[in-house]
Image (cartoon, rainbow, N blue to C red):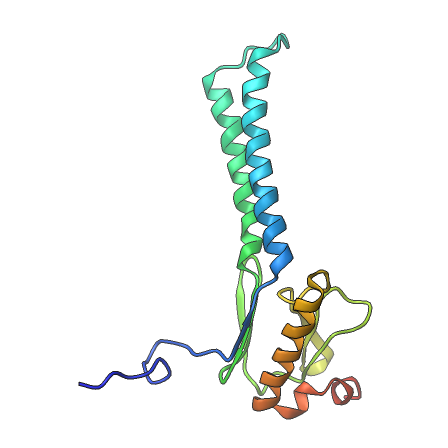
Length: 167
């Protein structure tokens, strides 16, 4: 029996380009750890200090759980990514993922004053692509170049920022 490739298997998607923000991921993980540690220290220190308030085990556990909740909410930023393939462009944010087919994509631009590029849509609408951030420096430049090349394969007019700006 012959093995089929991922492209031929139904239900499995193939993406030509995928990118996640590097520095944002590092900062989010470090900050989540710091939040949890601060809440643990707070739970321990408040029992030792004579504040005039009785703090029990349930209160200490609540401090830690609240820290875990804050860290968990912050960790949703790790979901951010952009993917480009035959199906179109998928932009995933902290809470939801959205796929735009090539018929909906007008272009990809990166305004000079912006922290991230924009996926240009019909009727002068746009969506921020948070996965490519200027703070990533050369990594962002390379990702944007690769993304433009991939977009050029499927919709050449969308990869040229000059033609998109004139629409």
